[in-house]
Length: 496
Ligand code: ADP
Ligand code: ZN
Ligand code: MG
Image (cartoon, rainbow, N blue to C red):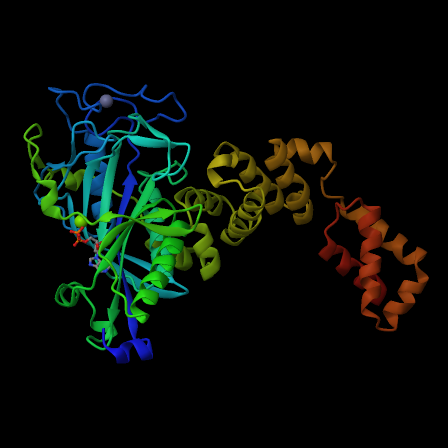
């Protein structure tokens, strides 16, 4: 590090990720144990294979390979003719075999790419590889954190859950890029229906960060080969389990390393632990190297030919493509298209409604009304999947002018979400059926007769007078008239 760089602060942050995602399959990756462990008692979803007992033989779960191929297609990766498994040897109590079955020189996906946007700007990150492996068991540290606990318990329910490790190139330049990337990755995985973001620990990130001196190299020339040459010391931060956590841990690490460099101290090459509660990264151990793991072929599993099979594995339309199509096909603005493609469930439901009614009306009711009310209640679209028919009926009531938009929004939709009532029941119970034209007309005439002062104000050009009269009519008709219609009727009457 030259003195000049330190003075001018010309340093670049370089980040690369190893993201572990649990794949949603019914059973574990190498045995028939259920992955649906929920809050079940520890060590109740186990068998000789996932406990790593001597002599137990693994069998590959077809569903896990299929999910991995879907990921490969979604990130535009090369999926080789043949993929194979290796043993990664290390001792740790969460893995009683003393090795993890993973992939090494023949991963199922290579050289992919994922586009995302940060503050409106498109960015793209290259994915070096994505491979399948087994999740280890989980450790519960009792009486403290990893370094202070009195003792530690181990639960093998998680052991053998299919994992995909997605390794990016060191293409990120800031912690907030990482956060946006993870959000996009999650969105894509959910579209593929192979990932459940709400599941605890379903996404875990190891984040590598180094600081590069820009007096040696141009900022936009930094790539893997430049990094190989300059070889800045980097840290790998483990134990990150959320998008926000990744951003915070990396921001901490970025500041820590920059401070060290600016004070003329070296950054140690090491593995660090993210302490979410304290908001700091802590040194754990010097970083192990590839050769420490003594990788060798897993002889109990034959190589897997995916070349023909992969053609049959289809993936759905992905969010970016769908967003563009929504804009063109339904004439949606950017904001609406974004909202309506935020999850596959929302997008599917919107298309369903748009086909039956007007797309604009469907967009308003799904993107603004429904998502707004769900957001307010901290609910997800999946929480109301069983009420889609009712919501469609509600849109129909609005489309056919049977109830006012105001009542539909404030009384019917809210009642449906809060109490699970059917729209027609609410309309009947609350007497929301739109008041017939005659009744409204009578109320208009009455309001004019009874409020000569307001009428005079109106004729004197006072803007507020008409609103007062509309309010009178709305009150008279119990809120079931359409305020826009009432306004017009009043004007017709007053100006006529
Ligand atoms: P290792 O063999 O030490 O695990 P890899 O080459 O497999 O290293 O890279 C692991 C992760 O570290 C990748 O996500 C990669 O992008 C990232 N990485 C590599 N070099 C750097 C660097 N100088 N700064 C930040 N991240 C890096
Ligand atoms: Zn098992
Ligand atoms: Mg690595």
